[in-house]
Structures are given as C-alpha cells and as structure tokens.
Length: 196
Image (cartoon, rainbow, N blue to C red; front, top):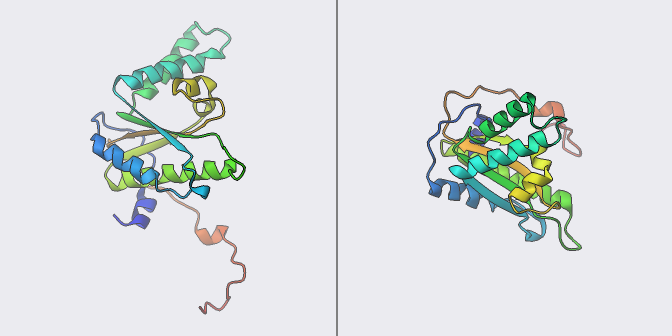
C-alpha cells in the first residue's frame, strides 16, 4: 500500500474482532515505531503490549482509577463506571501502550520527545492499516493517571501518550473529511507565478 493511500484511508476503528494478530505482526509495528525521527537519537519511547489476561488486569486498574475520585466509590454509579472501564480493556485483542521516557540531559527538550513518540505512534498506526489491522488511539485521564503509570512500572515523570486498541476491523470504517490544506497553509517566499 502506498504511504499516502495509508495516510488518507486510516481511521480509528469503532469495533474490532476478538482474534489475536500474530506476534510477528506486532513486532513489525514496534520495529516501525523505532524508526521515528528523534532529536539527539535518544529514542524516548517505551512500549507495553497487553493481550489475554493482562488486559483484564489493566481493566481492573482502569476501573480502580476511574472510581477513586468518586464521592461514593462503592455505590451503583461507581459499579457502572468500573464495569465500563473493565469492558474498555477487553474491546480489542491487543492494547499497545506508548510512553515517553522522562527528558534527561542538558540538550533534551521535553516537547521534542513528545513529538518523537507521537511520530512513533503514527508509524505504528499507518503500518497497522497497511497490514489490514485496525486501531484506535486513546488517551484521556487514563494517560495522565499516576496510578496507571505505576501499573506499568513507570514513574510520575513518564508520560503515557497512547493506548492503542489494536485488532482486525469488524465492519466498515466510515470515511472522513479534512479541511483542504491550502486553507491552513501560508506560503512565504514562494514564487507566486508557479515557476520553479
């Protein structure tokens, strides 16, 4: 599949089939991630791959984190929220977690590391689409939770940038629209007559 075609066609999947993709395919996605551009070649990414019962443990951690701040963490609302979080962890056969290592060294700039990990994530999403897989990139409060960072053995200084729900698509993915690039682009110093 052509890169531009993959970019245009890739969409977040609403529903995934339960069949587990081969580990070799997941390894290929992770390998693609490591070729993302990163300033100073410091490779600030860290990945976790959840499948099988690890998703159940993750679901329990999501549930615990979601109800922790409720006024009544044992009430009916609490149980509804906890169940939804446990179900979320089981909606895909694989969950890839992408985290950013804390910046270290005088030349390392945090935003550059964030951008590098985001590029690594995009590499995975595009290759997954090209290989017939579907993905959903999720963040939210769970990405900022100290409790969930501890679940992965991370420190408070780490940043979780993505929970990628991954599997085979179940049904069609709807087409999307984008604002034409010329509406959001300013050309500076470029010849106006189109000459090269």
